[in-house]
Length: 338
Image 1 (cartoon, rainbow, N blue to C red):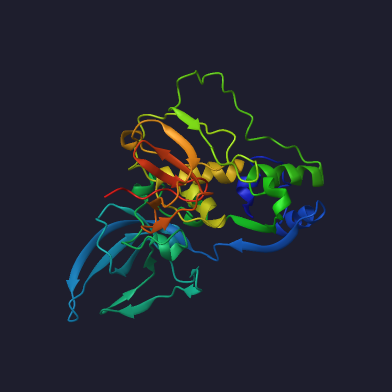
Image 2 (image 1 turned 90 degrees about the horizontal axis):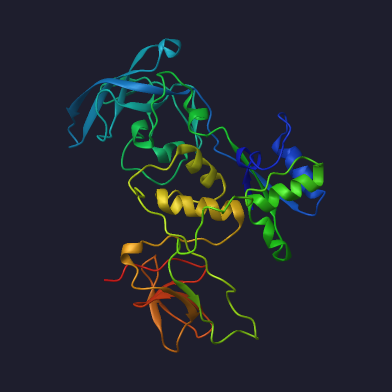
């Protein structure tokens, strides 16, 4: 289990000067094995810059590069000339600039270098180059993340890239510790620090009928044990799936070992890691009738989210609607029907 320390601090009091090694040492006292420490392996200067101008320059190899003038703030040298091969930004955009002396994951040291007939005095970075995910369709435009920070701002702390995670080995008999909630509680036991349970919520506003129809119908329990005791739903409306995932959430998910896959999936994964409760989001407009949790029928097949058609076993527990299986329970989402 990978535990970002900024996230852990929300649920239990860590000393301000507590190091990752201190946290691992405390977890060892309550029976967990320490595995590793994970960082973004990035060092500055990495700052917010604003594109003042850009000129497209066609090259003999058929590629067009942009010769950019980027304001990185007076404290960082003012306006710098930077060569960039991406085309998903315009003058006025605020971007992440890695200045000479910075080191990106790889390691990839940044230095002023001559390229395409210019001296590029730094680099405008993509999300992938910063270690924030696999997206590499262009450079990271901060407005796409809903960020408008002053020019020259330290982008490492702005994007949560200064966070660190500890990894502990969790044995199967302590499954509750596959969550931030469980780890925070154990850290509290180890140190006496105050624990704040993220599962303590006021659910008084949830009225009967606020969920979607769901039935558990396990007609073939394995060794007499039903596969699911309950399945709870709640309808959430007016959701904008085009909104960006906040960078602090992307950073925490990344340190916890998960890729950012868009705001809706990111939120469900985040809550799952927080509480240790399997969670999945469904598009209400695409559900055919109510949800039934049942065992697979003999010979039944379904396509999963990764595009693979799966031959199902009669012991497999499924989430279904009136159209058939929409996902293997607690494993993976179903694919979109053709």
